[in-house]
Each structure stands twice: as C-alpha cells, then as structure tokens.
Length: 105
Image 1 (cartoon, rainbow, N blue to C red):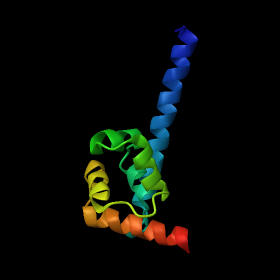
Image 2 (image 1 turned 45 degrees about the vertical axis):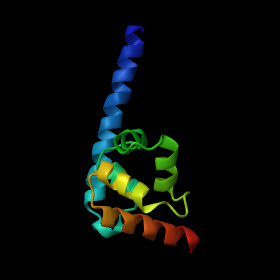
Image 3 (image 1 turned 180 degrees about the vertical axis):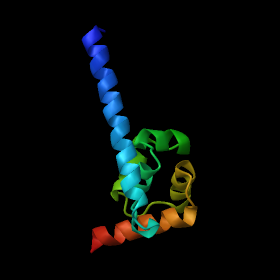
Image 4 (image 1 turned 30 degrees about the vertical axis):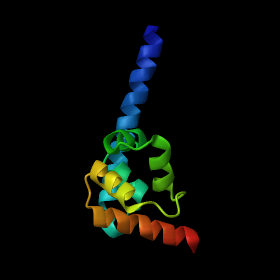
C-alpha cells in the first residue's frame, strides 16, 4: 500500500469515527421510546456485522430485522440481538414492534 493509500485509509477511518460520535450524540437527545432498532444499534456504536458476531446470527438476518424486512421475527432471535446491543430484551422487542407497525401503516 502506498503512502497516499495509507493516508486516505486513515482519513476515512477518522471521518467514520466522527460520524459515529455525532450520530450517538444526536440519538441521546431522543427519548428512548422513539429509537428504532437500527437507531439503537447506531447509538450504541455497533455495526450490523458487530451485532451479528455478538449474537451468533448472520449479517443478513440481523440487517433484515433492523430494517423491518422480517415481518415476524422470532422472540429468541430478538432477544439475542438485544443482548448483543446491551439493551433490555423488552425495550428492544418494543422498538421492533413499533417499527413494524409503522411499516404496515
């Protein structure tokens, strides 16, 4: 890797970290009941891959659930994701239920 490529990679990494910090700060200003599953993940500073690895689920499964593309996720799957995100299982299931209601309406 050239010096320019290394510098570019470091710049991208720094910008990514700044965006993560900004998103986390903005998410903190919202009442927790207003956060969707994806916003919870972002507020915690995790990526879909992080959550998948921590929960033992696939990236695809986690991504679909967080985007509301899985219409009837299993409670045990939601609980795994909640534990991976370090949030209460009940709060996470409520966030998913609210998101799914919004997508149906």
